[in-house]
Structure formats: C-alpha cells, structure tokens
Amino acid sequence: MQLHKEDLYRTAFAFLKNEHDAVEAMQEVTFRAFEKIHTVKKPNYMKTWLIRIMMNYCQDQLKKKKRFISNEVLQEIGGYSVDSTMELEEAIASLSSDEQQLIFLKYFQNTKIKEIAEIKKIPEGTVKSRLHTALKSLRSFLAEKGDVDHV
Image (cartoon, rainbow, N blue to C red; front, side):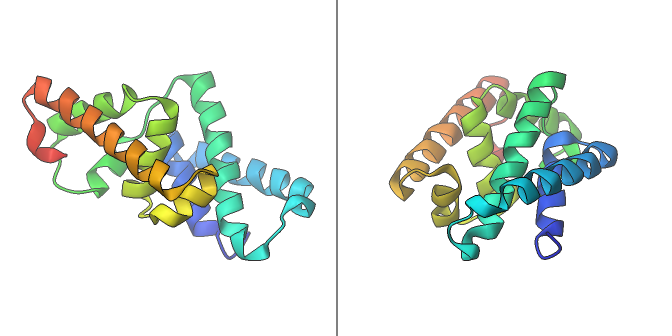
C-alpha cells in the first residue's frame, strides 16, 4: 500500500473531489485489499489490482452521491478555462460509467493502453476502440456547445 499510496490517493481524489472522501477511500481500499490479498495471482500486477479496487469503490460512492469529476482535475489535463471546464465536466458526465473510467485512466492518470487492458480485463484493441468512441462522443458533445478545440 505504501508503494502505491500516491497513485491510489490521486485516483480517489479525482473521482471523489475532496480530501476527506479520498482519505476515507484509502482506508476502505486498504481494508478491502488486506481481506483479499490472497486472491492476487501475480504480485507484479499489484498496482493494477489496487487501482481497480479503488476505482470500483469510488464508482460505488459516486453512484450513491451522484457526483462527478472535479474541476481541478480537469484543469490538470491542460488548457481549460473555467467555462469550458464545466462543459467538459458535463460532457464527461454524459458518458457511460465504463467510458468515464477509460477517459480517467488514459488522460488523468496517464495509464498505458496495456495497463488499462489489464485493469479492465479486456483486449488492448477493445480499449483503443472504446477510447476512440468515448472521445468521439466528447467531441460531438463539445461541438454542440461550440467548444470542439479542447478535445
């Protein structure tokens, strides 16, 4: 947990939008990981396994609280004004939960396609095509708003 603490916290904070909820997520995921550590088949995939647990926990919390990705995280991916950040957040919220996770992993966490495939347990080609579809949806949504240059 210590080795991947920073990545797990960033994942939690990006999904949950505040420090308190992110710290709570860290505690819960630590507990869940400890309970299920015996299910890890390959230790070199520990980070992938932990991030998947974190993402699942955060998705559950978001469903309960109906929250979306924070403006601060959206600004980290570069070049967004406050107005377009809200539009981008709205566009991301219009995607399916699975598409939101792919966008988050690829563009917010800079996760490689291969790692995303491992996390999601799908082929790399499927990851690429789903990302392409999600980006196309985002571009379409933003084009309707007149802000297509940001995606």
